[in-house]
Image 1: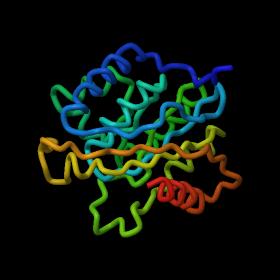
Image 2: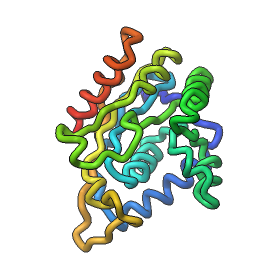
Image 3: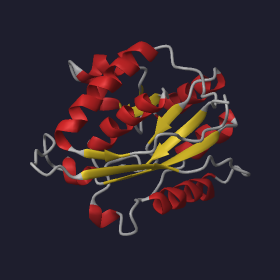
Image 4: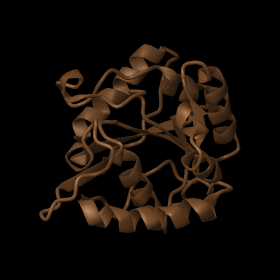
Length: 214
């Protein structure tokens, strides 16, 4: 029997259409090593948690989620929503604006969406992490992911991304084109259900699991 994923977001048509476009875009710059199947809480919403070392992370994750048949509401830097073109595009695809000043609002929005049966994606490090700040592969996680998951009583699905920094390095305005395209890998871990409200300990568990997937 085929696994039942959480219900598609309301913006599913736009999400999947853009996922297919991003898939075509990805093939120009990188080879992708991704699983054909992923285990999620059957029929239930979850919080997807990925590491963040390149702007290409977002593109790869969207492409792979679309190919797996998954959709989710992504928490994205709030300042991007103010830009003329990309801001409207993010809104049309169900993204959530997140920043220090909008943290509580963004988290409450994520919890409400999870309560309605929709999955949510978060990058717990909260920023692009330079190599110097991730000696073990990941940076310091922030506790917001634990607050969201425990408030909504849902699992966290850890995701490890490697190689994206070779395609779109920090500080570059665009991805790098190379004749020999670098390989980007994406790996999904098993769902994690928190047993306590210790948000610092919980985010540590998530980051350790992401680290093991790299």
